[in-house]
Image 1 (cartoon, one colour):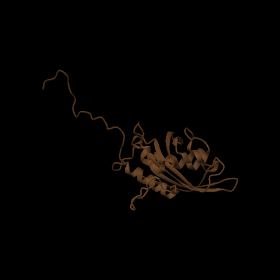
Image 2 (image 1 turned 90 degrees about the horizontal axis):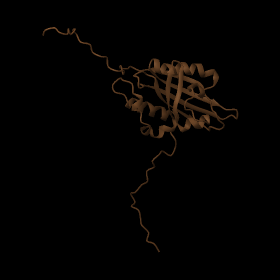
Image 3 (image 1 turned 60 degrees about the horizontal axis):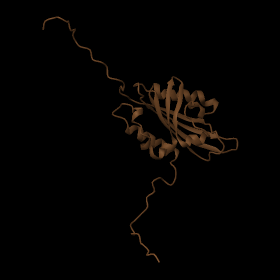
Image 4 (image 1 turned 90 degrees about the vertical axis):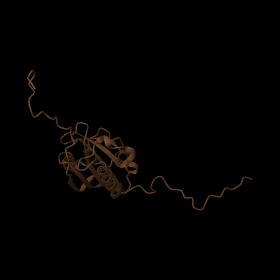
Length: 204
């Protein structure tokens, strides 16, 4: 017969992850907080400063966007929740693929202004399937500075409430809002030129 080891009454077990997944409002607020924490003054965060490990519970809902050229936005990386929504890996796909045809032009125009303004985009979403399952959600996209020093990258989250059901699930825009950011230059520092000409062979 083995002796019974009694645990101290004060010992508690702390879960590593929340029991319930974060809702759309929570993911939106958490991304804003993470993005803001990467800023130095008014400068926009750089893509290289984004650490997936720091996203924690946000990671399944997160995605990265490349602005290939104006009005052409592609998903560089997408979390597990986006894969579940579409039933496929979104890497390399245009961002508009997540949306129904009537809303794609508006979505691309609004999302492109994230880079050109720059600004933060928030959008309320809805998806209605043929079997009647309704998904509601929220998407947030925030600008990032790429390797060239231009604002050509972005980080976002897309979180939904409801049963996914049959895929792919594409969305309609319920409402959108853009928040412009005050920014400082983030590109390479200008090369300083001398205030006078140096004449070779001249005397000091």
